[in-house]
Image (cartoon, rainbow, N blue to C red; front, side, top):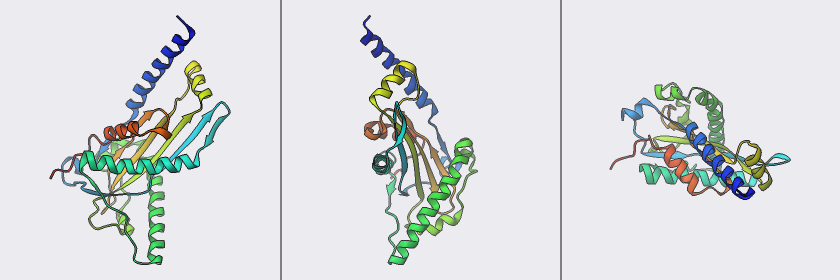
Amino acid sequence: MSARSIVLKMFALVVLLTAAGLHQVQAQFIHPKIKSKETTIRRVVVLPAKVNVVRDSMKGPEGMAAESDELSVRVEKMVAEVLSKQKNVATLPPATPASAEGDSEQKYNVADFQTKFDDLLPKIMKKRSDVKKGRFSMGDEVLNLNLDKGADAIVFIRGEGKKLTGGKTAFTLLVGGVPAYLKLQIGIIDARNGEVLVYTDPIFPGDPTTAVDRLRKALEKGFKKLPAVKG
């Protein structure tokens, strides 16, 4: 057997094992009010996503600010697209303030609640199953966001990923290590009382900066348990 064949077989094995491991990690947790249909998510406001990716080379990881910004926008749009096409959930635009002063206040409120979600996220990740018991909430202060009155929920998106250089990819295949990946943390919060209605953390292997179809499929799986809106 040639050295090239051995390398290719090793690559295939690593990819299979990685994919299997990554997919085992992802999970979905739904609030009991969603399961009992006491609460139905028909319309959401998707807040700007925060997804950070790094480039990992033999010299170590380095930031990718521009790529992270681009990926954040792509993920945000893809979440809205998947919710619309797979679950018939409409996406509403953020509130449009009537004045410059109102616009400034709205931006402050959004930034404030993004921070509050960041503070809550570690607690959710530590005891994700508690979402199914209705134990997490951001409080009714979410009303201060002054969103469209038709909004049922607010979508918060966080993520982290790693892109490998060619040299680091070869090194990982031969020696082992964490491959390229993208992992997301998505929380859907009740727009009226702040309860965490849905938490899902889809993850998949491969270069996160080029992910389109892989991203869509991961999100479709990530929202699989969310009931679709009928009629």
